[in-house]
Image (tube, rainbow, N blue to C red; front, top):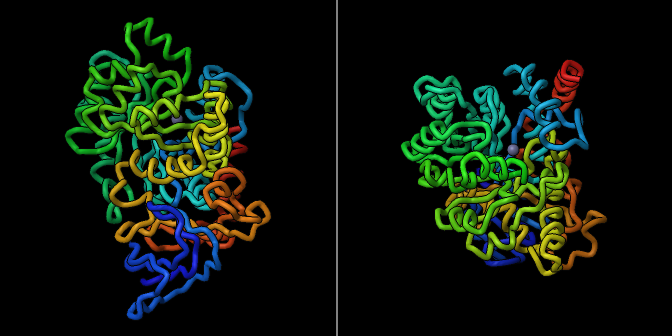
Length: 428
Ligand SMILES: [Zn+2]
């Protein structure tokens, strides 16, 4: 299928360009003011000067947790997690998780998010929703466990991780990838970290984890081991693979050095961190150290939106507050975190995150005629500081349009509403 997006303000890797973009076989074939004479598109989208951005990457999420949106707000993390979230999660089954995943994917697509990383359980049910929706995803079974004698061979969750890798890794030409996840230092043992690290290295997959989200958790780790979670993970061999570490709010300078020197990515989740009053990750310091930074929403139970625009704006604003410097985290840099930064966190930097010839056509077209976009001076400024989901005209993954003019093309919205409402009543 050949598609032409005519006359857009294209946010390329080299900056903004007024051009048309040709898509052939799911990939970007050309970016040019002139349309090649031999390019005969089956569909032409008239951009009329609208903004064409790389699709946004949400590199830290728990897809089914959208089912728990709004059940418990305005609580501290420990109380929120242990008293409100975990008991409800115990009531979930695969069918419910699938509905939650579908709801999150619908929200992603309506916010221009073309790829998402997930750490949860019910991976098979989630993967099926990813497959039919058309979005890209890196899926991982969140591993937890302390019990003595638990090994890779005897841990039930590890068996699920093995099945995820066997059945879904590189499905649909790599649109779906299996990652592995150590849920967090405080929910598992050193033996499990070593097993997970070994598994990731063996299979060449990304390892997701939560690191130093709260001061409490970081201090407890120091008390227990005399080392930070990042230092412990280094000892366990975790950084031999690409690591996608969520939060890193309370990391030390040495932690930042470890993360940067091993090519890890930090997924900054500013809205969730603010809502739970966890703190503000030192993103400026991380970027100066050469660390890769991406953006994530975390689950909708702690955000509560799965919104690329909300995340970008919050990231830029809290960086300025943290540094007491309005120059911190510019709009252009923030946009890069939400696109190329996310692709790196997913191990997909050779495939997406930038608009360049040969890359996958994972694109979002944004309406420059929405009131919050007028007048359009800098597209980067508009996307980070004033745009919202109503600006998304179209979301495309590998050249396939999945969302356009407010319509989800692969998800039945009415059915989703009723399915989610039934589960909401059950979990309330
Ligand atoms: Zn999380």
